[in-house]
Image (cartoon, rainbow, N blue to C red):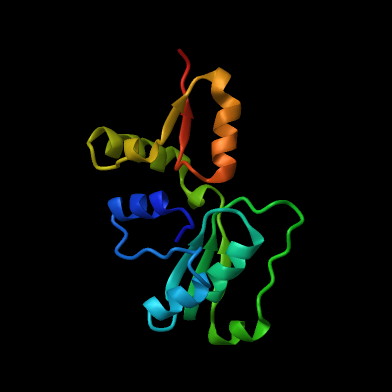
Length: 151
């Protein structure tokens, strides 16, 4: 789910079977219609109050919403209490709850074996003097990832 067409296409290229354009109406209703009532798992990766609440709202009964995004300090997430009665769950994670010493060497190995495609996630390579342009692109959401390279 995204508001930017190029990111929806990138998701499809990485294997997404369906994509929802959040700018084309209520994204929660779009997901519920697409899935006949909601999803079992939803992941919020932007770090916004609105998207975290939407993540929870699009669950089917018994579903789990996981907040990955860095929600600003002091932000409160609001959910309808009655939805907890259908055993919906909301949780957060820090760095994907990875086991750094075990997982990072595996990710490196998978990348080197060609089993983990990271290269296509890099939209732009910048030099250090272009860092402000990189932050501007990040704010607009126009890139998947920018990487600063030292020359």
